[in-house]
Length: 260
Length: 338
Image: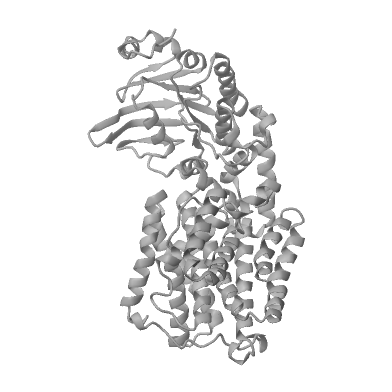
């Protein structure tokens, strides 16, 4: 497998607490890979390390042959690895379109001084961002709320907007943190279809952290299962469902069933 | 009579929303023609001093507003105003540099210093950043007391009036000492700088730089993950803010012809913040209006003698309760503008 992203022996300790212990796996280009595990297993910590928000204590994350662990988030984003957030994190007092436009920042060619004086490059950038933002809004089916204030949006739209913000940076790998959380069955199925389209139509590699097992089983090419900070299994959905250690991890906790 | 000068800029801002050019035209007319005419007709020459102060304070307040715009509560602008004032004073008295040159130099000096100070402290958020900036003003005052070059508590006095500014022998600004009415000259200078400051601020806010600042204000983590160099942008905004602070300090020196460690104290820093709050944090021209209302209002209330502070603070509390988003939020009901 020619991996686009490699997680190599990543360990993260907070004082005496080991959030991630020696986790390794590879991600293939245009793969949809899910990281699952009970609450507090260390999934989000792992994501933060990939996106540059947290530096691993030991181990490293390699993207296209370059080490990205330890780089600040804006540099990791610049390379093409972008994270959306667990909480529906958006710019609240901007409209949907403004949210998406401002998120095109990475692609601007004009300097800040150029923007200040309104250079022709800056104007070209702005025009391009506007067009690209409209494309993304259309792609995600958000036309109806284009000029709506983000703070007025319902949950489902917020989630889509978070994804639009991620897409605006034109990433190669997008990290989705619990994209299905708090959604009903229909909404989940729509989101599953949308994530598929990210891969099929936009050629993205998708990493996601998720609790919703039916959705994970449906959407993933492969699954990595983490428990108590350690990787306990890796494989196709069918392999994971049959894995005794995964079943034990889930049956061991009371509220999360593996849902098959 | 006094109502006229006070109300004029409010009306101006309202026009600004739709026919923007007309609004700017009216504003410039009021500032540069109507106010001087009004003052010479009414004979209230003391208004020149008040309005000059309003102009220079609103330059410093513009800087504070910009730090608010990136989501930081800045109660340390007095430090930079003091610093800028001393830079200008020292350069003029000890090195014989022309005032007109010390003006930008004071701003640049403050901007450079603020990068050094800002790099560590801008990592703090909310009340923690506010507390550190509050201390800055006191640090600046004590530094001015201790350093030999600032002449300690005696301060620097007998600073010359701004001299002639000429390019290739062509006099652009005459020597202030030769003018029949230096008060008017100071007023025009401060007002011009105020207009330029707000022009720059308006341009920043309405360019991509402003959009990025807003993204920073609303969500720093998300801002970083869409590729914004948040640390750099914060320091940049703070440096611009401090530049304005230094500029205001230098103008102050030119007007008062003296500077002491107590020229800008914590109270001034708090006032700059209040001007922004009262004017409206969401509006570029908020700090300008806030400065005018508060400073001018305080001055006018002196007729109330011992009740001055009572009425003033009562009005402040009432304003915050009724218009928590600032006086300019009144415009929002009419479609509003930025």
